[in-house]
Image 1: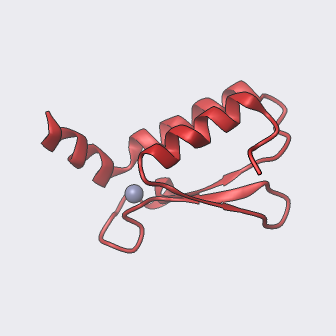
Image 2 (image 1 turned 180 degrees about the vertical axis):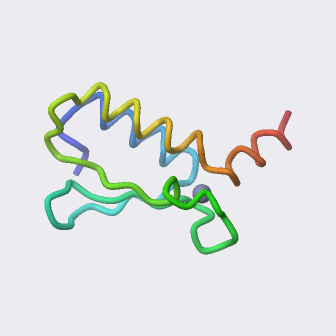
Image 3 (image 1 turned 90 degrees about the vertical axis):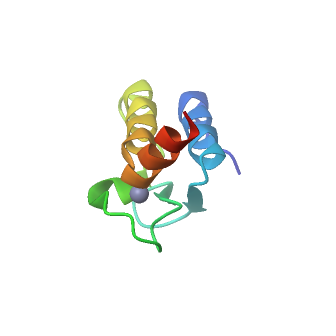
Length: 84
Ligand SMILES: [Zn+2]
């Protein structure tokens, strides 16, 4: 089921296009997202896993934050650099 907020749904689409795993459900949250390198050797730490809120006060901000988390993954950055 896609996220009810379209900005957040779009951000999740972006995350999943980068290989992030989106898991619905959980306590007080819509779901979680996991870095694709989470089980490899990614050291981006806090950026490797994030909670997705179902009804944040500011959905645009939360959507932006999700994209920033995806872009801040160290392994993701390395991959992007290699592609250039
Ligand atoms: Zn990562």
